[in-house]
Length: 487
Image (cartoon, rainbow, N blue to C red; front, side, top):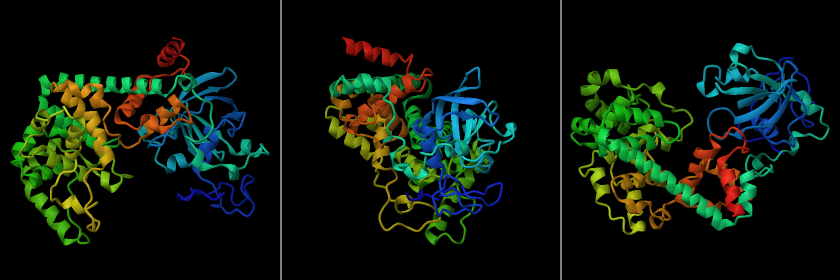
């Protein structure tokens, strides 16, 4: 088996050079010679067939893993919502689990002061070596796998198929999956579509409820701005929309796209303070133009300007950077034709035509700096780069524009003929994980290759999976599904 190609995590052994009994013959045995990665350890923790029994804490208390947690493919702890029984009294602890090769990696990776890790209940490492209790969340246990794995003569890291985890790996089917397996695809489709329609009705009602206080334009502005932040920057995008209201943006910019962009970038705290000499001439000119507009407003907005630390910028694909997304916001909201008015005038009698028009809003024909750029410091691209990809545009159409149309009184967009035409959005962890939980490992993804059914999976996750602490035992959805199948 080859090592994981994604930069294997290497470390220094505390005791100097010694061979690792779990390492393959010929593997490096120097202080940084451990040939495996955190992903190998994640697979061991996730798979009950690989996870050692018994496990013990650094203090010698026995651990029973009731549930290893949901494998987290996003930022944050490796596993979410794990359930463990610890000690002779079998005390129950529930929360997140973080996996590392070495205990000191907790500090090295900057988790000590990261609020995303405050719910960690177990720090699981390959090597032993306890951290000071003050470095970990209160009550978190520490678990080392090395000795327990070495005690199993049948275990080998070489046998792990990393590509099989987390979705292809065999694991017991959930109760929902067992019930739905015998109910047929039509029943599953109906369940997902009903849940999706309920999710969009709820969004429409929430938007309509905001109209009296905020107005239709500001409500739409805040909702789209939040969606532009996607999963990493939703909060700062919404904050920006509240700090710089739409009417203020329009008046201060004179509905000029470049001026509006300069204001958005300035209030967001993302406008470069200077243009380094290594940037090309076109970029330096563009940044200077932005400052020509922003400096007139900078003092007035100083108390309400966001800071770069408010944004999550590391690890983002360049296409998704807020600096590019804000250009799309400027185009959408200071256009001579108000977006709310264009939506109100949209003919929704023909779903395909209406949805095509909605998607086209996010592919504007505007000649801007970002048309052929991914970053300020990068080279101009030979081929134009869209300000938003098709999958993300589809997500905003389904999650924002369709509910907004319904809130405007176009109730036909919430009826099946329209909803069943919603384009699918880009796959995400919630959709994948809920489909896996609800339909089992061998399900056909074609069952939810529509925007409406994806919305249904998200609704089921939020209504049931997210809040269930019984690991399906007391889940209301499971009980309802069982009753339906009996009928």
